[in-house]
Image (cartoon, rainbow, N blue to C red):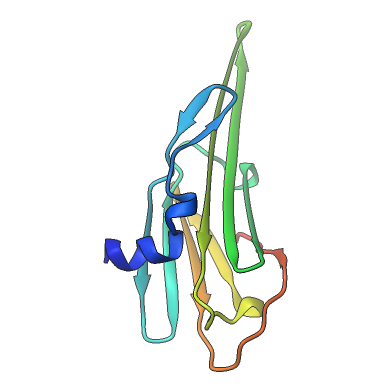
Length: 123
């Protein structure tokens, strides 16, 4: 399954992202069901409002930033990843949910192919 997922992540995006001097990894898995691809992203410690999820030009982009300012100490954690999706995705039917630190993105498949860019709402 990892080999299957790696072909959609692609070598171009297969590296840890560095933001603000912090190296961050986003733990992603992808499953293929009968009528969709399902991506699971582990995002413990983030609030739903801190997660940004977009689809544009054949890629799903996940980014999240958590900032804490307590007792004159500022901490920030950021994660980022891009997933190149297959051509048979129904881009108008993408959905996402976030529960218990896990972001689940459902990428339904369809026979006809179209592509457009837009935000994906997280429920």
